[in-house]
Length: 179
Image (cartoon, rainbow, N blue to C red):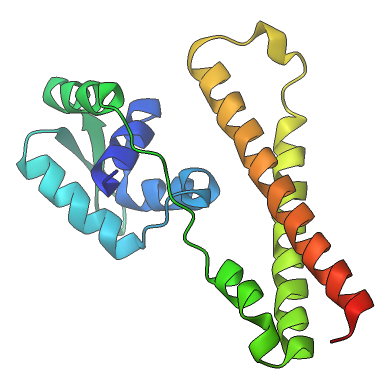
């Protein structure tokens, strides 16, 4: 996946300026696809040049004009083609997993502190996702885009539960081991 596809999804949900997109990205898609604000602005310009986005310039009092981006028919077609393209199985690439594997070759106590900090981060994200999930009173009635959002949220909850469980297993096993 390229950043372009993530931006097409975000802009299909709701047109917005580069700043609005960057903020929305930080609160949603950014949990599973990271991009800096600079990358987002650079790619938006390229997507506009390619005809995937239309831009409306909105004057602002006392500030530079704001560019609001929206997906064009050409951009919608690119997104539809990408959505229909098979995706290879995602590979786990985790620095933490490599550290856990190599834990016997270094300072175990220091590694356990690193893992406890990672566990705290995953617990915080899991709590955040669960708070978001509370907004869905009756998920059985969801359809379309709302159902897609809910199911991705459920996937995020599952991933965080996986990380929490894995890290707790490792930490608990080596807290007893003391080797």
